[in-house]
Length: 242
Image 1 (cartoon, rainbow, N blue to C red):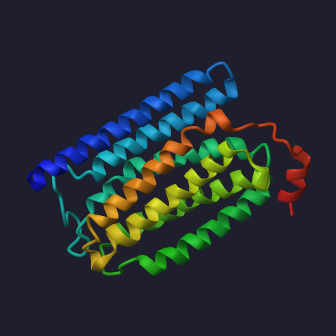
Image 2 (image 1 turned 60 degrees about the horizontal axis):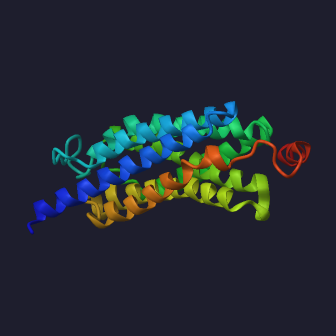
Image 3 (image 1 turned 90 degrees about the vertical axis):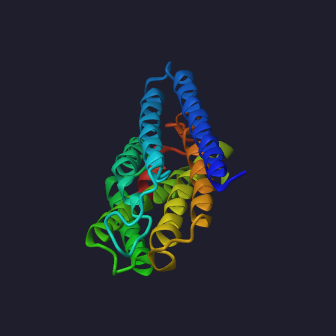
């Protein structure tokens, strides 16, 4: 079996995995259509998944493009996928915002957002290659702010329930955090790692495992979330307002 044959088999497996995940998301949406607010969440999660799948296709680099916009970053085609991943994850943030408005004050969410931006900025400074094109640096920085919010939303989701959170909430929270970890792998190991050459294919394989795990868990959010938690809303608002 040649290296080219192996690549085609891997791509076929990955496309099949994405197809199954999309089918699962559609089935979840169909199962919650009778509950209006769950249906809203399901529509948001489905739209997010579809956009992210489009980003996955870009990341597959089917046309074997390298050094398109930079002499430093070999896998700069990854930047193009932000066109899909950014709105995809923004859609997911809207879903989380719909949930969080029932449990957290706007002031508390603003504080969490600022803290997330600070963490994202510090992390980005430690991984960026300043010799890369300005376009790459700007796009990846602002995307890092967005994807860090996804991880933060996973922590907030878990905090709504606390240590006694149901298993489904634990898994969805972990899925949201894994989305941030997966893109951190892309930044540190695939885009800027190894002086811009990337640790390939290790970075791709590690990212794929983390990313698929994340998406496979997050799509269940409309099914497992409850907008009437065990704890009273007033308790969360008093905590969140601190």
